[in-house]
Image 1 (cartoon, rainbow, N blue to C red):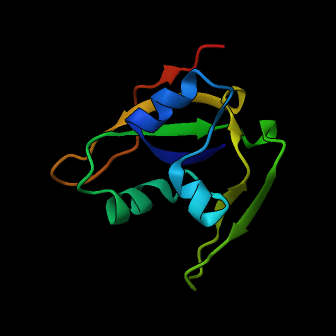
Image 2 (cartoon, helix red, strand yellow; image 1 turned 120 degrees about the horizontal axis):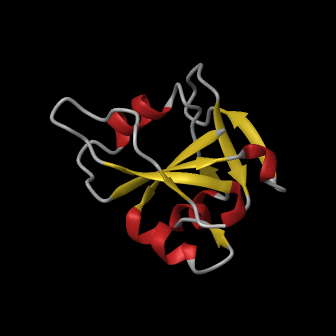
Length: 115
């Protein structure tokens, strides 16, 4: 499983279509994702002031596009980048993702994606 932090509105708009791809995909050519171990660090670094987020759990075995583990900023951690749209069938579940005063925590309550 890999994870993607999405704007709630972007995800909800994508649910009616067959795949998810954020606006950033058009700029970067890939969708930024994280491993479970990386999610909180990414969220607390890049999304701390956002309150309109969902965390998508993606079954990477259901993706039929290239996934590259790479670091575009010169660090040591390699992040999964999805080079293509994510079919809704690959998103197994999602959770509202809101920071508390101490930062984000990994969700304990998930919404199963409708099949």
